[in-house]
Amino acid sequence: MRIVLLGPPGAGKGTQAALLAKRAGLAHVATGDLFRANLERGTELGKQAKGYMDRGALVPDDVTTRMVLERFKESDAADGFVLDGFPRTIPQAEALDAALAAAGQAVDHALLIEVGREELVRRLAGRWICRACQTPYHDHSAPPAKPGVCDACGGELYQRDDDRPEVVGARLDTYEKQTAPLAGYYERAGKLARIDGLGGIEDVAEKLGRAIGGPAAVAAAHVTVE
Ligand code: AP5
Image (cartoon, rainbow, N blue to C red; front, side, top):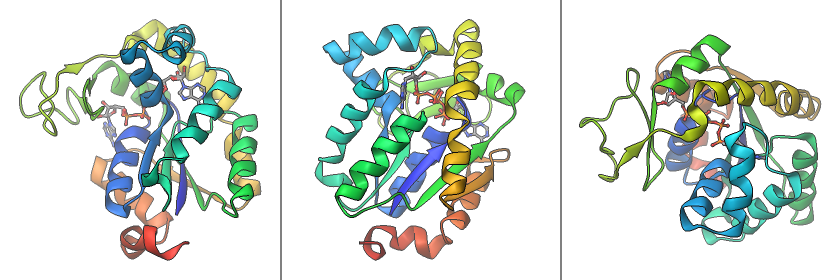
């Protein structure tokens, strides 16, 4: 199964993609995480991406698409994936469709997580991320058992540079201009489901699971759709 998760910054894409990928046995491919991992390693790609990320703009399509297609070559993506943060523009969506079609594949579901701006700002202001495994936490809605320490791997928690209020505004504007039109793109293809992103993390996970065919479809995702 090949799933695209859409939604504005802070909607819960990373949180839900990690859960869905784990439960369905799919690879979790997150472009933001890939850029940040490159930045940590000091690669050219990371340095190039940083300038765009720090001002809430998108990294150019060709650079981003190349990185994702390279990631698809890793063995864990062979049975399918949950894409988190990609595509983010119409040209990226078209490049993804073309690459999958060349392999006789296609996106099965595009799930748009909808959350209002006020709640997005609240979520991003209270977010903490694990430096080692990228698990997101929140001061109020998803606190770690021990402050500053990841429950999953014991890694150090930090706040992202682009979660500063002045960058969050720019990211939300970039989303409206460049990424929101993807809803129409996938709606025309008959693949879009809109998910209300308010409610607890498990409530939202259940809505996403229903949109792709229910718990049985989640459990069987990586064996039924080849
Ligand atoms: P990226 O890392 O993808 O950031 P984003 O899309 O802005 O999304 P976020 O990671 O901020 O939010 P999320 O929706 O994953 O929410 P989360 O689950 O963490 O991209 C960063 C940058 O990289 C971009 O700005 C761009 O520069 C570049 N980039 C990336 N992809 C690109 C592309 N394709 N093309 C070009 N450039 C690209 O949740 C947020 C918080 O809310 C957390 O604290 C979480 O614990 C909490 N939370 C989650 N669910 C709930 C809930 N149901 N109730 C309450 N709180 C919740």
